[in-house]
Length: 367
Image 1 (cartoon, rainbow, N blue to C red):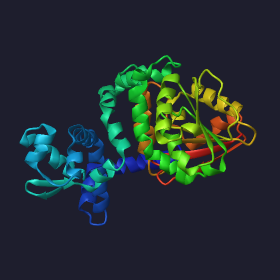
Image 2: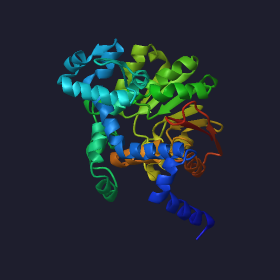
Image 3: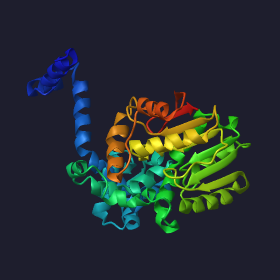
Image 4: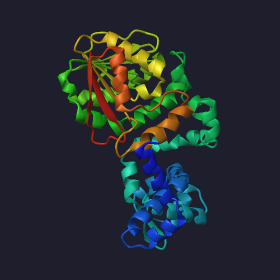
């Protein structure tokens, strides 16, 4: 047994002892620590009710209603199509989570976290489709035993496994969700990396083109290209034309798991793509990008990553189970991704700091 293993065994024996827990709760110097641990454990146990409270607030439109100004319980009940008692219970729960703020016995306003959430529309879009994830996690052990996939979330993302056979109606929910949640990370990536230094940029798996539209303003002289499945490309063309970027953009249709990528770009971006794929297809993507880049060309990977200091639960806890339910992919640490890049042929890579590593980190690789 190693020294660390001995230390962990001793520590767990102390922390799990009811007598020590009572002592820590009474002793003034240890009481704050004991209370934080108790709160953390309770949040771990009760977290699913918090997420469902948030889901109810979004589904009923309560946060949007309060954003227009304070309301009485009866007004919220009418808007949410709830009985007064149900609206009151929801508002009290949302207040405890700082989504709502109570102004008096029967008056409510939007809370601090509720306001922050409405400022990030992609969060609401993610929560709105979480009922699929909740269904798959109703029996987490069964999900783990079957190795993921096959459930509600996998059916939602099914088109991504089809090499372009889906039509516009099939890909619409996926594409809309990805586009709506793109602002969560696009500005962070743009703030962290000088896109204006590049002449030709290709976004692989770029969906409806939301990321390239965001990049267009910071790289006004760059030629922009997108590579994705045909049905998704159609939606991207409509977005580019609507944004006034039609003359600057080229759309290449195909599957990056099967087709060669277009050449001639000095920067290729992978935005929330690599972690959606298991190791073998992920290596296929990286090798295809390596083959498409000229010597000195760069690959920018941006996505949430495992082992992010201060945000560990977002990696292996949230995305670990989310991608398992989806049936493909896993969160990877920066070290794992850099090893994969070396195996694909890239001569060097580095991690670039972002303002909010919890939502996205960046690795830049050079061919």
